[in-house]
Structures are given as C-alpha cells and as structure tokens.
Image (cartoon, rainbow, N blue to C red; front, side, top):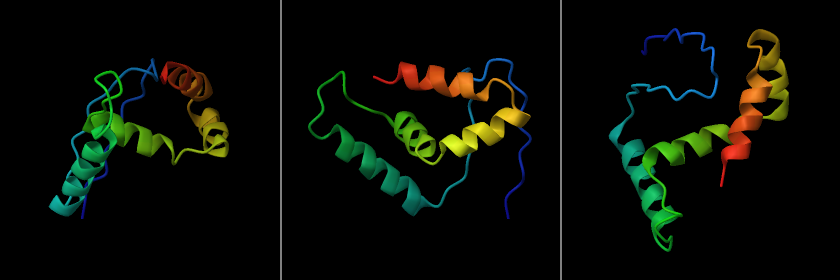
Length: 89
C-alpha cells in the first residue's frame, strides 16, 4: 500500500517539481520502450526523454471539465494549463 503524499501549494503552478514514485519494473520497461519508439525516427530537436513522455501522457488525462473543477480549489489552474499548452512545441 502506498503512502499518500501532501503536495505543497505552489504559488507558480508552472514551476517544475520533482516527484519520487515507485513502479513495478514491467511498467518502467514499458515506458522506456515508448521513449525508444518516440525517438526512433526523431531528429535531435524532436527527441523526448522519460520525463517528457510521462508529462504528456498525464496531461492527456486532464479534461477541460477537470481544469474547471480544479480552478475552484486551486485558483490559477486554468492560467497554468494555458501557459503549459502555449509552451508545447
């Protein structure tokens, strides 16, 4: 069973934070394969690393409804999401 983490309330919701997670080896290996697949035909500017892959996959799970709901409890969430989207190349 995992411990529940308390995440600090960030003033800057676009600030990068480091999380330590524990995953089964098969998931780590699957993630490594996805990184390899993404980079297979990519030129140097298009290459991704594990952090980028996980970030994008997690972001895909967040819906517009989620952002609106989170905005009530975390003011600035929608602005942070907009800034993040604007930074995607």
